[in-house]
Amino acid sequence: MSTEYDNISPDLIWEVVRKNNSYLCKRKQGGGVQFSRDPMNLANKHSRKHDGFVNEKAIGIQPDDNTVSMTTKLPSRVNKPAKSTQQSSFSASTPNRKLYKSIVNSTAKKGYRADLRMEAVARASAVKLSQKEKKDTPAPKLRGAKARKAAEGSS
Image 1 (cartoon, rainbow, N blue to C red):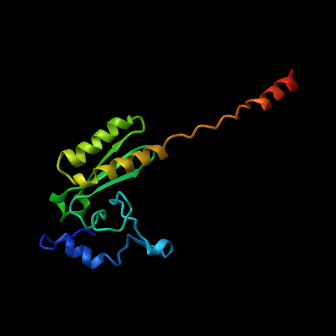
Image 2: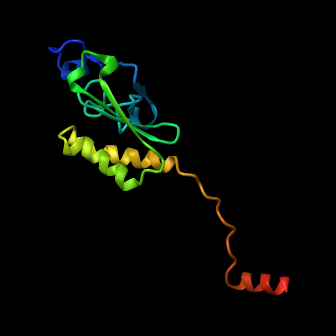
Image 3: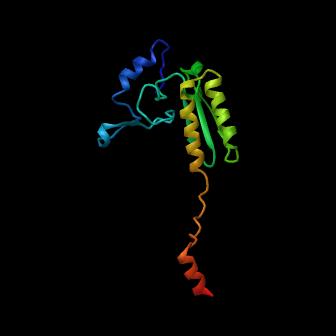
């Protein structure tokens, strides 16, 4: 849902589509909270600030097979939807600090939506953590009187 005309402001688009769009997910539990399924929405909140299809500049961080994929919208190509995004991916072996630094450099340091810096780093951290292999929990060691009884019983 990108705009086709340069003379339509993002604020007008938001006012038209804010109560009903394909990414909106309404919940009656929790006081009628509203979420967004937009892939360019870092916080998954239904708000003007976070929705990527409304803003000319937006950032999306999604998990791929075993990589973290970062997508940014290019404001110079708003009228060409197929070419309007730039994608970069980071492998699983990329260290966390290098991943966070590259995300910060591409968002805040270049003047591209500095307000989304913390959300982008948090989203990348959560994706990276979800892709980590879980270790088996070891059997708990017996301590104190139970350990002494077990040692006496086995010897």
